[in-house]
Image (cartoon, rainbow, N blue to C red; front, top):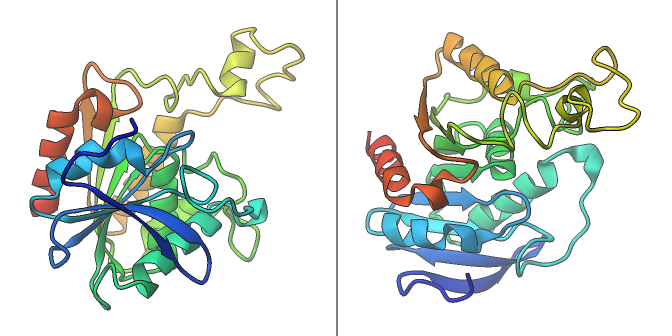
Length: 255
Protein backbone atom coordinates (compact mmCIF):
# COMPACT_ATOMS: atom_id res chain seq x y z
CA UNK A 1 0.00 0.00 0.00
CA UNK A 2 2.87 2.38 -0.73
CA UNK A 3 1.90 4.35 -3.86
CA UNK A 4 -1.06 6.73 -3.63
CA UNK A 5 -3.93 7.12 -6.09
CA UNK A 6 -3.40 10.08 -8.42
CA UNK A 7 -6.22 12.02 -6.73
CA UNK A 8 -4.60 11.84 -3.27
CA UNK A 9 -1.77 14.09 -2.11
CA UNK A 10 0.49 13.76 0.93
CA UNK A 11 2.09 16.45 3.11
CA UNK A 12 3.70 16.89 6.51
CA UNK A 13 1.92 19.56 8.54
CA UNK A 14 3.08 20.95 11.89
CA UNK A 15 0.85 22.14 14.73
CA UNK A 16 1.80 23.22 18.24
CA UNK A 17 1.18 19.62 19.30
CA UNK A 18 2.66 17.46 16.59
CA UNK A 19 4.21 17.03 13.16
CA UNK A 20 1.53 15.13 11.30
CA UNK A 21 1.60 13.24 8.02
CA UNK A 22 -1.62 14.08 6.18
CA UNK A 23 -3.36 12.77 3.05
CA UNK A 24 -5.83 14.96 1.15
CA UNK A 25 -8.16 14.65 -1.80
CA UNK A 26 -10.90 16.75 -3.37
CA UNK A 27 -11.35 20.51 -3.68
CA UNK A 28 -10.29 22.58 -0.69
CA UNK A 29 -13.51 24.59 -0.82
CA UNK A 30 -15.75 21.54 -0.49
CA UNK A 31 -17.19 20.41 2.86
CA UNK A 32 -14.50 18.70 4.92
CA UNK A 33 -14.61 14.97 5.65
CA UNK A 34 -11.96 13.98 8.21
CA UNK A 35 -11.12 10.26 8.22
CA UNK A 36 -9.43 8.67 11.24
CA UNK A 37 -7.76 5.28 10.89
CA UNK A 38 -7.77 2.36 13.30
CA UNK A 39 -5.10 0.53 15.27
CA UNK A 40 -2.12 -1.08 13.50
CA UNK A 41 -2.78 1.03 10.38
CA UNK A 42 -2.42 4.57 9.02
CA UNK A 43 -4.17 7.13 6.83
CA UNK A 44 -2.90 5.17 3.80
CA UNK A 45 -5.62 2.58 4.43
CA UNK A 46 -8.17 5.25 3.46
CA UNK A 47 -6.45 6.44 0.26
CA UNK A 48 -8.68 4.60 -2.22
CA UNK A 49 -11.78 5.63 -0.27
CA UNK A 50 -10.60 9.24 -0.37
CA UNK A 51 -10.05 9.05 -4.13
CA UNK A 52 -13.63 7.81 -4.50
CA UNK A 53 -15.18 10.43 -2.20
CA UNK A 54 -12.96 13.33 -3.26
CA UNK A 55 -15.25 14.33 -6.11
CA UNK A 56 -17.70 15.86 -3.64
CA UNK A 57 -15.76 16.25 -0.39
CA UNK A 58 -12.49 17.68 0.81
CA UNK A 59 -11.12 14.51 2.37
CA UNK A 60 -8.45 14.79 5.07
CA UNK A 61 -6.81 11.79 6.74
CA UNK A 62 -3.95 12.04 9.23
CA UNK A 63 -1.61 9.42 10.63
CA UNK A 64 -2.29 9.46 14.38
CA UNK A 65 0.70 10.13 16.64
CA UNK A 66 2.97 7.12 16.69
CA UNK A 67 1.44 5.66 13.53
CA UNK A 68 2.52 5.83 9.90
CA UNK A 69 4.78 8.78 9.15
CA UNK A 70 3.60 11.13 11.89
CA UNK A 71 5.78 12.16 14.79
CA UNK A 72 6.53 9.50 17.41
CA UNK A 73 5.09 11.31 20.42
CA UNK A 74 4.12 9.74 23.77
CA UNK A 75 0.51 9.11 24.77
CA UNK A 76 -0.85 9.83 28.25
CA UNK A 77 -2.98 6.74 28.89
CA UNK A 78 -4.71 8.53 31.77
CA UNK A 79 -6.43 10.71 29.17
CA UNK A 80 -7.87 7.81 27.20
CA UNK A 81 -8.23 8.87 23.56
CA UNK A 82 -7.88 12.60 24.17
CA UNK A 83 -4.29 12.92 22.94
CA UNK A 84 -5.46 11.64 19.55
CA UNK A 85 -8.60 13.82 19.60
CA UNK A 86 -6.64 16.92 20.64
CA UNK A 87 -4.08 16.34 17.88
CA UNK A 88 -6.92 16.11 15.37
CA UNK A 89 -8.52 19.31 16.62
CA UNK A 90 -5.23 21.18 16.35
CA UNK A 91 -4.84 19.97 12.78
CA UNK A 92 -8.35 21.13 11.88
CA UNK A 93 -8.34 24.41 13.79
CA UNK A 94 -4.77 25.72 13.32
CA UNK A 95 -3.61 24.91 9.84
CA UNK A 96 -6.17 26.33 7.42
CA UNK A 97 -7.08 22.88 6.13
CA UNK A 98 -10.66 23.67 7.14
CA UNK A 99 -12.06 27.22 6.93
CA UNK A 100 -12.52 28.74 10.37
CA UNK A 101 -15.99 28.07 11.73
CA UNK A 102 -16.83 25.31 9.25
CA UNK A 103 -18.21 22.18 10.88
CA UNK A 104 -16.48 18.98 9.86
CA UNK A 105 -17.83 15.57 8.95
CA UNK A 106 -15.97 12.84 10.85
CA UNK A 107 -15.42 9.22 9.80
CA UNK A 108 -13.60 6.92 12.21
CA UNK A 109 -12.67 3.28 11.78
CA UNK A 110 -12.26 0.99 14.82
CA UNK A 111 -9.98 2.88 17.23
CA UNK A 112 -10.54 5.94 15.03
CA UNK A 113 -14.28 5.76 15.71
CA UNK A 114 -13.51 6.16 19.40
CA UNK A 115 -11.34 9.17 18.56
CA UNK A 116 -14.11 10.91 16.61
CA UNK A 117 -16.64 10.25 19.39
CA UNK A 118 -14.23 11.83 21.86
CA UNK A 119 -13.69 14.76 19.47
CA UNK A 120 -17.45 15.33 19.18
CA UNK A 121 -17.87 15.31 22.98
CA UNK A 122 -14.97 17.69 23.51
CA UNK A 123 -16.00 20.12 20.73
CA UNK A 124 -19.80 20.36 20.74
CA UNK A 125 -21.20 22.20 17.74
CA UNK A 126 -18.05 21.64 15.65
CA UNK A 127 -19.16 18.40 14.01
CA UNK A 128 -21.62 18.16 11.08
CA UNK A 129 -22.02 14.36 11.08
CA UNK A 130 -20.32 11.20 12.32
CA UNK A 131 -19.60 7.90 10.56
CA UNK A 132 -18.62 5.06 12.91
CA UNK A 133 -17.04 2.21 10.95
CA UNK A 134 -16.63 -0.98 13.00
CA UNK A 135 -16.28 1.16 16.14
CA UNK A 136 -14.41 -0.02 19.20
CA UNK A 137 -16.59 -0.64 22.23
CA UNK A 138 -17.56 2.56 24.07
CA UNK A 139 -16.87 0.70 27.32
CA UNK A 140 -13.59 -0.82 26.26
CA UNK A 141 -11.19 2.07 26.82
CA UNK A 142 -11.12 2.64 30.56
CA UNK A 143 -8.86 5.72 30.40
CA UNK A 144 -11.61 7.90 28.93
CA UNK A 145 -13.15 9.36 32.06
CA UNK A 146 -14.67 12.62 33.27
CA UNK A 147 -13.45 14.74 36.17
CA UNK A 148 -15.41 12.57 38.61
CA UNK A 149 -13.71 9.44 37.32
CA UNK A 150 -16.78 8.03 35.54
CA UNK A 151 -16.59 6.61 31.99
CA UNK A 152 -17.43 9.37 29.51
CA UNK A 153 -18.73 7.57 26.44
CA UNK A 154 -22.10 6.60 27.92
CA UNK A 155 -22.64 10.40 28.07
CA UNK A 156 -22.18 10.71 24.31
CA UNK A 157 -25.95 11.28 24.19
CA UNK A 158 -25.52 14.77 25.57
CA UNK A 159 -23.12 16.26 23.02
CA UNK A 160 -23.70 19.59 21.34
CA UNK A 161 -26.34 19.79 18.66
CA UNK A 162 -26.33 16.01 18.16
CA UNK A 163 -25.06 15.45 14.62
CA UNK A 164 -26.50 12.53 12.71
CA UNK A 165 -24.59 9.26 13.12
CA UNK A 166 -24.05 6.41 10.65
CA UNK A 167 -22.91 3.13 12.23
CA UNK A 168 -21.59 0.79 9.57
CA UNK A 169 -20.09 -2.64 10.30
CA UNK A 170 -19.53 -6.11 8.89
CA UNK A 171 -21.64 -9.09 9.86
CA UNK A 172 -18.56 -11.29 10.36
CA UNK A 173 -16.32 -8.92 12.34
CA UNK A 174 -14.15 -11.04 14.67
CA UNK A 175 -12.47 -8.03 16.33
CA UNK A 176 -15.45 -5.94 17.39
CA UNK A 177 -18.33 -8.29 18.17
CA UNK A 178 -20.33 -9.70 21.05
CA UNK A 179 -17.98 -12.72 20.95
CA UNK A 180 -14.73 -11.05 19.97
CA UNK A 181 -11.68 -13.22 19.40
CA UNK A 182 -9.41 -10.47 20.77
CA UNK A 183 -11.38 -10.13 24.03
CA UNK A 184 -9.56 -11.95 26.82
CA UNK A 185 -12.84 -12.34 28.70
CA UNK A 186 -14.39 -14.21 25.79
CA UNK A 187 -11.21 -16.22 25.15
CA UNK A 188 -11.07 -17.11 28.83
CA UNK A 189 -14.62 -18.43 28.75
CA UNK A 190 -13.60 -20.55 25.75
CA UNK A 191 -10.73 -22.04 27.76
CA UNK A 192 -8.01 -20.31 25.74
CA UNK A 193 -6.52 -18.16 28.53
CA UNK A 194 -4.69 -20.04 31.32
CA UNK A 195 -5.52 -18.62 34.73
CA UNK A 196 -8.62 -16.73 33.58
CA UNK A 197 -10.28 -15.74 36.90
CA UNK A 198 -13.82 -16.34 35.73
CA UNK A 199 -16.85 -14.46 34.43
CA UNK A 200 -17.52 -12.70 37.75
CA UNK A 201 -14.07 -11.04 37.70
CA UNK A 202 -13.16 -10.81 34.00
CA UNK A 203 -16.39 -11.02 31.96
CA UNK A 204 -16.57 -10.96 28.19
CA UNK A 205 -17.52 -7.61 26.64
CA UNK A 206 -20.51 -7.60 24.24
CA UNK A 207 -19.00 -4.84 22.11
CA UNK A 208 -21.76 -4.50 19.53
CA UNK A 209 -24.40 -4.49 22.26
CA UNK A 210 -22.48 -1.85 24.19
CA UNK A 211 -22.28 0.42 21.14
CA UNK A 212 -25.97 -0.03 20.46
CA UNK A 213 -26.77 0.86 24.07
CA UNK A 214 -24.86 4.14 23.76
CA UNK A 215 -26.45 5.01 20.42
CA UNK A 216 -29.91 4.11 21.69
CA UNK A 217 -29.37 6.61 24.50
CA UNK A 218 -28.28 9.12 21.88
CA UNK A 219 -31.55 8.53 20.04
CA UNK A 220 -33.63 8.88 23.20
CA UNK A 221 -31.91 12.24 23.74
CA UNK A 222 -33.19 13.36 20.28
CA UNK A 223 -30.11 12.35 18.29
CA UNK A 224 -30.44 10.21 15.18
CA UNK A 225 -28.44 7.19 14.11
CA UNK A 226 -28.63 4.67 11.29
CA UNK A 227 -27.10 1.18 11.48
CA UNK A 228 -25.94 -0.57 8.31
CA UNK A 229 -24.57 -4.13 8.38
CA UNK A 230 -22.67 -5.39 5.33
CA UNK A 231 -22.59 -9.09 4.48
CA UNK A 232 -20.35 -10.92 4.05
CA UNK A 233 -17.87 -8.56 5.64
CA UNK A 234 -15.35 -8.40 8.48
CA UNK A 235 -13.75 -5.54 10.40
CA UNK A 236 -12.83 -3.31 7.42
CA UNK A 237 -15.88 -2.53 5.25
CA UNK A 238 -14.09 0.27 3.34
CA UNK A 239 -11.45 -2.25 2.21
CA UNK A 240 -13.59 -5.38 1.86
CA UNK A 241 -16.67 -3.78 0.27
CA UNK A 242 -15.25 -0.49 -1.07
CA UNK A 243 -17.92 0.41 -3.62
CA UNK A 244 -20.85 -0.36 -1.34
CA UNK A 245 -19.15 1.43 1.55
CA UNK A 246 -18.56 4.56 -0.55
CA UNK A 247 -22.15 4.55 -1.78
CA UNK A 248 -23.56 4.26 1.75
CA UNK A 249 -21.32 7.01 3.09
CA UNK A 250 -22.06 9.28 0.13
CA UNK A 251 -25.80 8.84 0.58
CA UNK A 252 -25.51 9.54 4.32
CA UNK A 253 -23.38 12.68 3.88
CA UNK A 254 -25.64 14.02 1.15
CA UNK A 255 -28.74 13.54 3.29
